Length: 553
Image 1 (tube, helix red, strand yellow):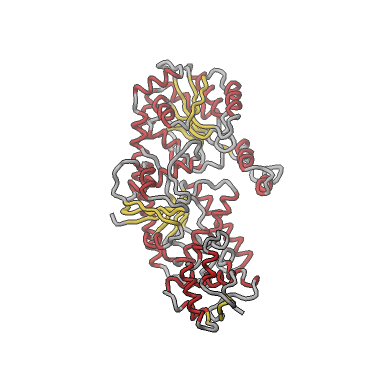
Image 2 (cartoon, rainbow, N blue to C red):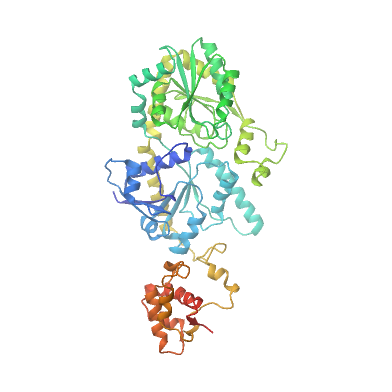
């Protein structure tokens, strides 16, 4: 292995705790897969914290052996992604990273790769759109996890570019590649969790299932605001059970972001599925969730929310050998083939401009929360209950159909969505972007600094009477000696931000240098010190002037 990749993980923590969002699980699994299956010799994690590489390694792979070397450094160490050639972020915002790259090492030093987890929040869409006006190039990429996301982002960038052209004139702005790479799952691990007959028997008994009873399973966050309204699923299970003449249990394994919502779910189940035995299972308990994968017969997920763009749980269900009944919705229609691994249930969106009030405006100005924003849209998105009920009925009455679709699902995972298949696609994208970057001719930018978030001493130079330039002449203030520095050595207020300037020993050398001279230019003072220390000395001279040790007038 000779490939190398940098991964930007701001908080330095790569583990998965309780009540996590799907993107957190997906990023953890992706980073783990890049280490195990990416064909990489070296992975550099760039963080905001001092996190040892060994700690990240243990969090990702535990005690498992792996040939990939893992190191960690601060995100400001831009020579590291430059050496790697590409940096991956598990989020879609690339703007600040692009400006940091330009400021420190230049636009063509390495490629940026961002991952789009959702396109629903207006704030996230704004973050993504900023790539069109940041120093982003064709050797950078935003990774779309499904064709639906790729299409939506293509349209957004085209319309955003049209607006910019109309507003400012000129040719189309450059933008990132919108590359299609799915997420994945650990197929063998999920199969092993599901294929446990003893666990299956014990769990089904604990839930009150007889041998011929059917257990339908949902897995995911239990939020009708952000994931799916449960009523269509409850109605479909009820209708299917009545048509099939079978005892059917419906288990929703997940976690409630708002614990009070459990009562709403149970109320809806009593109303819409009175003949169904309804269970709520703690899906944040990984052992309990594994037991549910082992004990279930059918997976059901009728997502109706624009927050969902890919969907990991249908992949987990297929890897577990379960037939799936899912809504024909963005990423679901990419991963599940109707009639093969399961059934896609038709969905119906609301009419364009059909809202009686400005919902986007109400959310943007804080009058409606994001949960209310997407929840209102989901409440007016339909999933065909009758088609879902018929699909469930077919699976309930036919063990052979369940077996055949379950086997097809496992085959689908092995061939297309196992991390061992997906991770190399990320490595291949990095190599493709590197080839584009090396073949491109970059015109020197007007400025390496972000005009909006640049150098504060430059941006606010007009606030002060003057700035300390190389030609400024400085001398010791009257009566100053090295003893003056000793007086403030233990003063915490005076020593604030000491690591941003020269040391006190170097300040004493400045005092000694100026003792025998009426005045010297800043340039002459700096030349008396090693080049590597001159930038800190320059700030140190301003600090010495602040302390009244130097006179610059």
